[in-house]
Amino acid sequence: MSIGQSIAKLPLFVVLIGISAAAMLLPSIVALGQDDMPTSRVFFYSAILFFILAMLLGFVTTSSARVQTGWTQLITLLLAYLLLPLILAFPMDAAMEDARFFTCYIDMVSSLTTTGASFFDAERLSDPLVMWRATVAWFGGFLIWLSAIAILAPLNLGGYEVTSEAQVQGLQTRSAGQMRAASPEQRLVKHARRLAPTYIALTIILWVLLMITGSESLAALIHAMSTLSTSGISLNGQIGSVGAEAMVLIFFIFALSRRSFTHALNREYPRRMLKDREVRLALAAIVIVPALLFLRHWFGAVETDTAQFSDAVASLWGGIFTVASFLTTTGFVSQGWDAASQWSGIDAPGMVLIGLALMGGGVATTAGGVKLLRVYALYKHGLREVEKLIHPHSVAGAGRLGRRIRREGAYIAWVFFMLLTLSMALFMCLLAATGLDFETAMILTISALTTTGPLAAVGGETAISFTGLNDLAKMLLAFAMIVGRMETLVLVALISPRFWRG
Image (tube, rainbow, N blue to C red; front, side, top):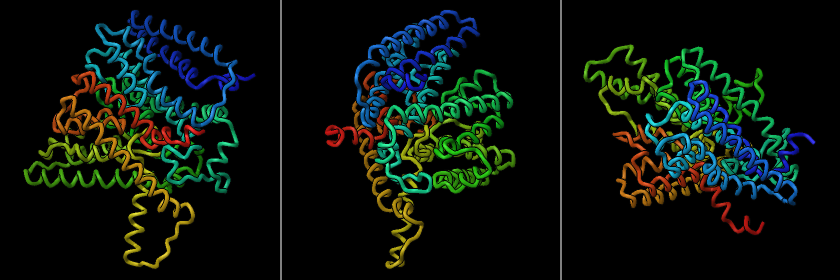
């Protein structure tokens, strides 16, 4: 029996515990390299402890008869976001002095959901602990890749409901046929084998490129992991040089469309990516929004007679990088972003970044938000309605899939948008009940639901810190992060009568 077949017989949650135990070795090695023996021992012993726990649970559950479906794996995924941070927080709590386990748990929820919001002051986090947060977020990013393709896609959830039909060897195959073609365990193992080498290779490539541009090795690794997972976790708060930002900007493509990593890298790759709906919409946003911001900054500088070419270039680059970063819900801020604000004398447009985070990245990627495909469906539907006002009897083209996106796809996208709006209103009211003002509650809610932790620092007039919140507000935000990561439509599907009858 192969290793893949053995793993397929284990419950998904047991496998996640084993992977979490293995991940604890990475910060242990980092701490050992920095002669931080207490932290290294904590993570090493924790890895052994939870690996033994995973083995024992594996022995107990392997022999039991289990009938897994896509729905049971979906609820397992939800429980993983709720319970797995309890295990992930254990070494962090033991390694930090005077740390509360509750705060460590909330911080691990933030990392696992790739939100990246830190609930500890930066000076309290040593390099191995930052490495642990980035590792958990990186692991969470791969979990999103895998679960979206192996679990959500066959159930027409997670953005796939916009098209609901997939192209398989030139034929339209409904998701029900995909579910009958292979068991849930087989799909997980198959897609894990295909995606894991790609995810690891992309991280290593970006790590090397960042070191070539002058970044320190550990900082480069953390930024590479944070870019692929769109968590925005940083060792020192800045990516580094413009060259390093340029490398990170290139790798944002993997948060804009699932086709960037699910298709082979060949001669047709650039043309195929440029024809992708999500990529085209993202490029339009990355070009138009910085251009408008640049003109806004330019006119402000002209009025005060402070316009200089070097400042203009820094402003334009800062806008391009920061817009792409928040569109992918990563949250890295360019060095040129502050320079642009100071150059023009105008406050940073935080509301623009909030709108970009809400818009989000691609379906089945690590990005959060509404997702580009849903936005594209609403745009095409609106465009078609305008055409019908001018030519009521016109017939639109774009084929069967195009009609699907404009009609049923746009309808479901609108339903999701309304559910997200209601979720925002609910969490804003609950956070306001804890004593927060309207602006703070709004920014924190959007930051959590879109899994864009760094948004809290730049979305308002002043930076908002997660560390000063009370326990109830932290718990509400943790739940909002899970809702944003799982998506409201998925949670609604879980409580539907169809799920319980199944």
